[in-house]
Length: 174
Length: 165
Image (cartoon, rainbow over all chains, first blue to last red; front, side, top):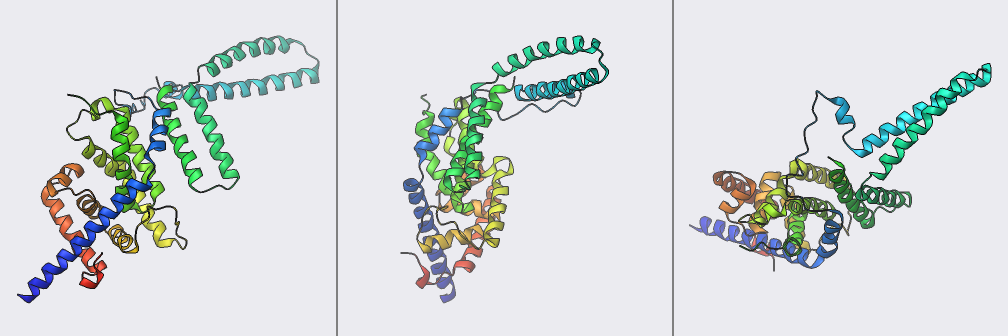
């Protein structure tokens, strides 16, 4: 009988202690967590979407080319890469022309450059505002890392960046 | 039927969810990050989530089950704590030593038991409510609560001299 009394008393003591720890944490979180500024981050960088935004469409294995061009960022990257290749080609042709003194390839190269420039301009203007903000926030994170700021300021900047980048991704996806 | 505005819901529930996650993860920053992700999901789908019978339970369920990110954070945190020499004093909600010791003991439990203990003692959830929140059978919750309590009794000691004030 004594054993069961001891056991019950021990269980009650444990219960008391656990409930007290739970209450203390609950009160601590209520007074120490700043919900207002965290809410501002969500409201600033995100718009509510009624459909399922978390369920991103699975990449279709049948069309790798379309998946490459799915977002404006990827399209931009692709155009930039193409431009680089083109510029290299033009540079190479000019070099060859200077070396050989042959004028013919110049005509082809000069017609190609302006047309691709038009494509770049169009792509840049279609970048959503959220993505511009994301880039700015990324700069801020990098600046903090460069200054070796690794405390809560970095965390908050990273959090803002994450929220903004999610908003950018959602805005940019068709 | 009127739906509660998201900002009111957020301001009331966000600190509590952060507290719950910090109890389980120790790091307040990780807890805030996970909580923020959870509320972001709720915000994007607030037309539906806000109309649920119990959005509070939904938020806790998502916070504790976010695509395995909770589990990864939990395990990462435990490893970091084991290997860490320096503790980040600012990275926690301040508690008295006795209460902090209890939460440290809870964090040594397997994640499933720690979740059940936290929901029971922090959120005052009944076994049935925990079963709904975690999507497990009530019998499983009961067993996990029992096992968790047994381990905590061993870790913390239950003598009257160790009781909290």
